[in-house]
Length: 243
Length: 191
Image 1 (cartoon, rainbow over the protein chains, first blue to last red):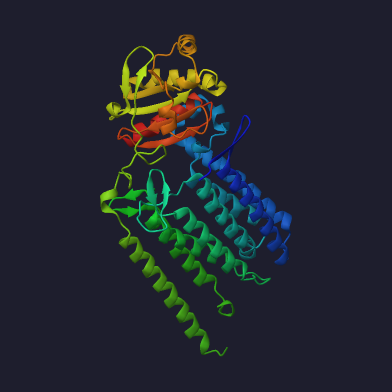
Image 2 (cartoon, rainbow over the protein chains, first blue to last red):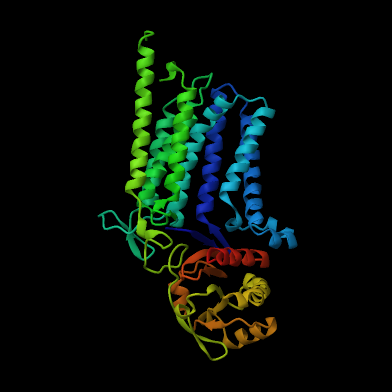
């Protein structure tokens, strides 16, 4: 694990660097696939950029809303560059709403646009796995399997490597399925379903799960809901020709 | 593909989806850990979020001695610093203000000076300059800094009442709002 690189007075956060590279590579793929689907790549690129910015702002505001009196007395703190003061769920929600609004305003078709995003999203998930390898986050439960790695004072499942390998497999599968020009949105749903199913599977080997009453893992319940929702929409959007 | 093939292929897809969903539900049940609610899966201490904070006992600047394990039941903020580190200097007033605001709520701030990289005279002058009232601990041989695997200065660990690290902040300076929000989150967690 390699969380920081010191370059003179600079302390570079390697996981953040991996995520930025993933974002850049993912965006490049999205633009390529937008062209293939006869869409304007710059409009699709802008759609992602604005949704991301809105998501980051939403995540910060969501965090601030948990402590309204603190941030009301010092609103300038909203601009602090601290990644630990973000509420990811709120960021996801605001980003998704922005995406939905912009799709409508830009007169882009939802399903082909989502298909254009699919390989880029799958590639980004590979870099999320690499970021976890570098940071040591998303670590495994203690294990005595022969391939266990020594991390955080214990031998553990190398879940970061499992995650990266599975994401790479999903990326390969999705890249091999060229979306049709009319776009069915199924490639995107495939990425969503496979990614959430892989999270549901891998969570059982994780050592950092949040547990709910009854010993259920929070992430597994969310992943199960997303997988179910993905299947539902796949069934709804499916043309028999695409089976 | 004939017309009669279409319903059967659709049906096959539906069966695959239902079977996959059944597997996800079963796996979720199978991988439950009823004994793990509210506790980390690993009992071994490690300097990162979700683990018990590694224990240490150090001398304080005013001649006392503090053991982290003896503070269990309090919220503890462990701030690693040196006098020559500019962001450490910048965030010190925010730490002092936070200590004043929360010390009666069972919140303890430990200013853990890496004395092996500093000088005791300068540490004393620093504490006097900022009027520090929270305990200043002296890591004379750097062993605690090593145990906490520091990657940069300042580094701050927010530890909950059970002794589990909830947030690690590498670098700084932390603002007063930031520190207060992390402490408030820990106070809410223990209610």
